[in-house]
Amino acid sequence: MLIALFSVKLGWFPSIGAGEGLADRLHHLALPAVALALTFAGVLSRVSRTAMIDQLGQEYVTVARGRGVPEPTIVRRHVLRGAMTVTLTYGGLLVPGLLVSTVLVETAFGVNGLGQLLQYSVTVKDFPVVQALTLLTVAVFVLANLVVDLLAPLADPRVRLGAVS
Image (cartoon, rainbow, N blue to C red):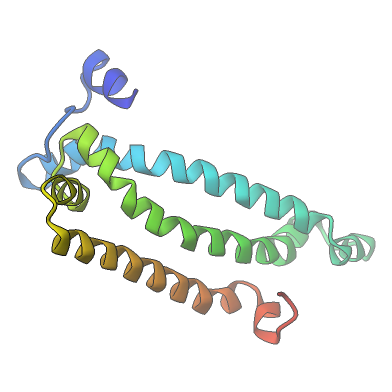
């Protein structure tokens, strides 16, 4: 749909290729980046919304409201911190999916990259390359989870104290 609207109908962006030079390359990669980001941004926003609604119903929010704490302060200092842990965790799980979904996006937009390499390697049965790319995906997954585990105590101090499970 992005190609049909922004490339064919409006003519704002090229529909295939990666471009030459930095400015042209960024212009060519804008639509593939939007295609990758839209799906995952939607999922992450829904998870964030649900986590925020869940945190707003917690007892400590009711107590803070009862003590007269202004609503923006409650949301910023308490609710957002509690919801950030869930959002970070889910975001860490989406990173490998983002890497794997490049196969579809690179094929649709005619961009060479890891996704195209994986597709070609599977087609010609080049198992060492498929294994290497699978190992890379697993390494990205492990690294993303490590980063999430390191950032979680910074987002919500209760994680550091062991109060959140």
